[in-house]
Image (cartoon, rainbow, N blue to C red; front, side, top):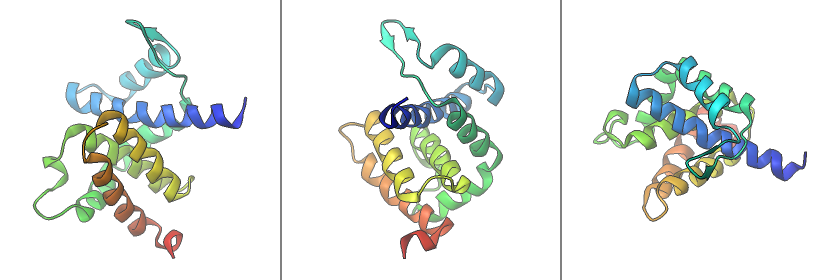
Length: 154
């Protein structure tokens, strides 16, 4: 497998993690049901004429588990990065899911923070192609990353 296709699979896993976290919150489904649904029925599938990219299942699962298990810590870091007038529970649920998935990857510390930020800004662009959200995501994730791994930015 080429380096490019591995990177595409990781990018797809990040996008799917955001979608799965959003779905869990919106529909009150549990982690195992949503994880199974994505890995079994969405990765690499064609549904309603839409081809779903193959995703990196390991990264997808790590992001989901970490986002759920570390949600309080990730939300606290996100709240700290947001302005006092906009606590995490007031922001768009898609952006909230994105912050949780990105926060999970930053907490895992297996990928350089700048790569995580770039990847999740791209996810934000996929959901909000014409909006200001990607810049907002970039700023908040930068603040979270600096809090978690300040040495990466010196």
